[in-house]
Length: 398
Ligand SMILES: *Cc1c(COP(=O)(O)O)cnc(C)c1O
Image (tube, rainbow, N blue to C red; front, side, top):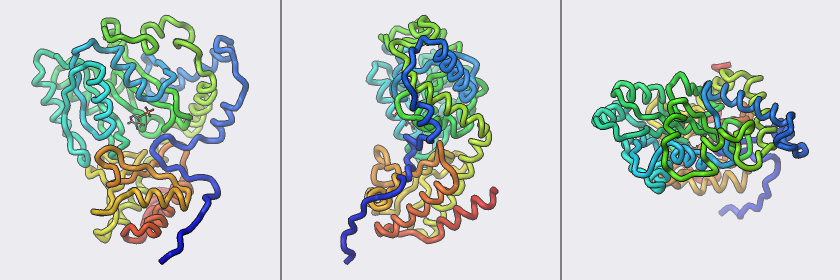
């Protein structure tokens, strides 16, 4: 029997959770500066640049709000601003996060209908269209959709959801959670006809947790005028009256210092190059997982629909009867690699590799090699060759 190993992790922790993500030194340094009056012209310039930058990332020319909150706060803000008690909304099931949003909306007093889905295959878009077509009285005020379901590692094609709404000639608003895709995967708020887009600071934007953003279409702004849900801090109309900052209370200036740098980094690389990098790293990750499961005994990809696999997170299904807890514990405590766990019903059944934000090939290969090492140490069955498959994938894409 092996003696217990008492290892104190050294070196930098490899952080491969799908959020929060690595905060680049450039952003940390940009935030490391004295406080500033949020009404000072110097700050207003920074804030203005950030707002314009975030709109370029969202690809919207419409309204943008920033909240000092997590993404959950922006979810709640959207519900409070758009609806009235007793209104009905339609949730497109994608996984754990879609159900979380649903639970919030129900708790806030709305009626919720759901388009159910197999989490591994993803929703059938035709079912969304059918559901809306049956709603002849247009009771459904909005469709709530998670663009990138961080629990399952699958993407929802939002342009197709919009098409389904339009084909049913339904006036419902389209609300989208892009928290784990924004700044990592293509997103086109206006072109896709999204009415409300919710993002957070701590994933593709590579920032600390605590700031959420919400893009709001003109149609949704109009709907917010008649909403009767109670709200104050999150009231978009009230925020709009607090010019020039559009903020209620003290503006968290350091977040904007960081955000200015984040946008600079994304645009220096170029958004398309950022998306291509994420695609490359995701493909390499999937190649590794395919290799691990090639003998029919190892871990496999959780997502089953090839053209819906996420480029920011890969959800890996453990072999039958083997929990992911031991593997994650070994990876973290012995090798200083932080992997994501399974959420809700997937707890223990999967682990998740976050490959979004400030990440490059050596970091990803370090993560994949160490995952292999941790599988070996923890006694998880797998076929060898995952890292080689990832290298081949990366080299092939040059
Ligand atoms: C991380 C995440 C959230 C939660 O964001 P918070 O900022 O922690 O509230 C919600 N939805 C998705 C899809 C996420 O990935």
